[in-house]
Amino acid sequence: LREKLTSLANFLFTLHKRTEMPFNVDLDNVSSYFLKILDKLHRQTLLSDSERDVFIRLVFKWLNSGILNVSSVIAHCDATPTNFIFCENGDVVAIDLERLRNGDIVYDIGMVCGELKHSFLWRTGDWHISEVYIRHFLKSYASHFVDHRKAFNDITRRNPFYMAMTELRIARNDFLDWNYRKRLVNEAMQCLKWGLIHS
Image (cartoon, rainbow, N blue to C red; front, side, top):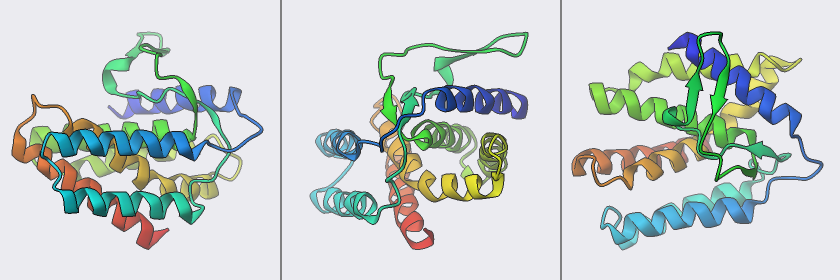
């Protein structure tokens, strides 16, 4: 898993570096997608009215904080495990590119981290096991920058927002156990709150 995550970090860095834009991320697109996920969860009754309101307040605190105002790149925007093929020669191939668009590098990074957290939580019941792999992935990505410590800090500052969005995105899947989906929702809320406190 560490080797695959290193390869994926290298691939995503290359994609992002080669597609840097001279303008910032369009946060209207980010907020509309986040709100769309919340509306779906509300319709599925995974979110009560009051819970949805809390999430909306948290999302807008993030959007208005300035933390997410960063340069745009081309992001995959659907960086789930099934959308990457790891070749024997070490190459990584991305598939399902219909969501490809301008965005934050951490859109992809946070999605990978959220998927890692979900994979371990779903299979073991303990998300803490995923932390060592998440950290490895983040450090692998940040290692490509001249000032890798600053890059790591900048990425991890924004990561809770995109991780939370990913957890909520996963929670929409009705093939998952209801209680597990609720746990993902709760984890996402804690992630958003923690990120605001520690940013």
